[in-house]
Length: 391
Ligand SMILES: Nc1ncnc2c1ncn2[C@@H]1O[C@H](COP(=O)(O)OP(=O)(O)O)[C@@H](O)[C@H]1O
Ligand SMILES: CC(=O)OP(=O)(O)O
Ligand SMILES: [Mg+2]
Image (cartoon, rainbow, N blue to C red; front, top):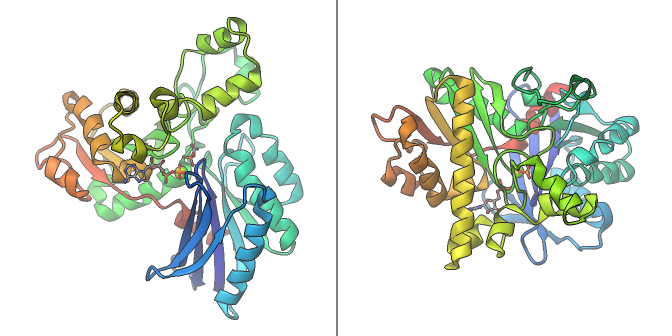
């Protein structure tokens, strides 16, 4: 098979783009990749080829509904760039697949409606992941679009691990833990046996630390527990999300302070986490560079949550033999990795400070009971692989 696949990964703070060539049955081959960072004052999609040359650069206007102008420009550019080769499909990261979507699907209007209906379960992500699909369907009705789900990798989680202590009738209607960042975890699961077969069988906790952050307890490539739940609000403290919180706080915000449901949703998803505690920014880079004590407090709390939840994941695994850092923060922040590992020394997590400073692939001490690694994630290639399987 020859042709190309476009991948769009719409996260809570960025749109990541990948264009892949398909050559036979081998792994999709990256042609160019790009990023639109919502932290930027004037976000723009900048795409570079594999040599690092900028090949596309267009601002995204705030009032560009559904990114129509941006996506129109992008499609025109891709047609010219591929010079005769055909765009075969567009693959998308969709955060919530709910109960019905546990493998990648080719999107139809009915499926799009069903996925939009899950918006209350992922209000920060579901609309931004789905609106490009709707826009692209109107721009190119004949082009196949494939949705790949963050929840799918955790689909085998079963009671009691995915169960809430609620009356059973709520579980019966789908209120249980789903877990997210599945495309990232699936990619990491694929990397472990390539690094070494022994690593793949280790009791592993993967820490995906980005704008959204979660942990996955992994054994033999499978998720056995994860920190996010019905929604991507649970578990770790995040850029602007609170993470695990006493549900009584929510009741008090409503009953005691008279806040509306919409205001509480906005507070928990968009105003809390690093941003809420620091009162400065949800961007870890900004906090690390700040001398304000509130920034340091926010970073401390972030690391406390992460370390605390690692112990919960280790419990699900019956021990801890490997800790993997990934995601924007996990891959790049020396200090955050160090602070998390410091809190986990009693579990056998022994960080090699020099290796950590250098950002080596392996950052644990030679005799550390727990092997510590940095593995850059790649949700886009995972989506491209799923598309190739579907095609
Ligand atoms: N060099 C760095 N040091 C610390 N944090 C970083 C660095 N580079 C990126 N980050 C953090 O990573 C976050 C984005 O992570 P990423 O996984 O790319 O996010 P998304 O959830 O949007 O996919 C940013 O908000 C930033 O705080
Ligand atoms: C599920 C989730 O939190 O995603 P992101 O990290 O892209 O916000
Ligand atoms: Mg992400």
